Length: 327
Image: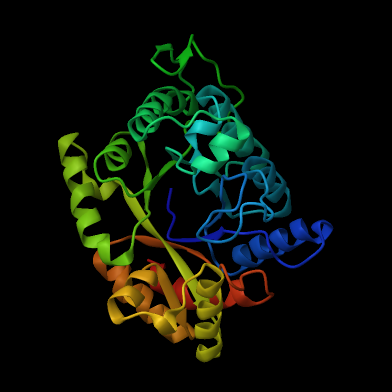
């Protein structure tokens, strides 16, 4: 599996009637496929996230959406970034992502993480538990899911889950890629070293050197060659041929979240924009190269939170970033 250039859809708030919402999603993913993105991602949430919008803004269920996108595309890989482990029984999740793989002709990736959005859990009735609980549950779930994706029949008597000779058929290939997403240097990175093909590092760009050092240590602890675990970084990109327009999109987006860049000192401004890459195509390419790829990360997953739904912007991003990660 190689994820060098991924496109994530972080919101479904397009100012359109609901009937036009999914066609707008399809248009973005088809544009991403044509522009050279290798993987398309949707979030696995039921409410919009606080860093992006309000809880009652539109949010589609991830695997229904991905299965529909499988029928609207031909080559691009499909994944959640990332599946919340707490929302599904692990054997059911193995079946769900394997079905997506069959439906898409072998294009599914299991992206998975521990889960973190407490409001969803509380209001929808999912058990949230402590931080340690969620990571213990993730580890136990991986003991079930990963063997099932390989056609094995695991029997697990765990604290959180149990299976007995669990069968997962049909499958279209011998295994299915596993991506872990998160920034936890001990638990998440440790699980990635043991189970994953790919780690999507969720952190501020300035933290990447420390995160990659921690990942190398986790790989060494389990005797894994670090070079066999591919990495990517999730970047918020505000891109426009007009750089001032891109910077205005950034200001408007941050203002919608209660952050006024014009009132911040240099340190606070840097902290507020540490995951953002903003400007003309040349500006964004330079920032991605210097702040992400030159740090040793293999690839980049971007979202275009402000304007990705506008025709042509995804294509512009692919044309801009493709050359940085091709080979």
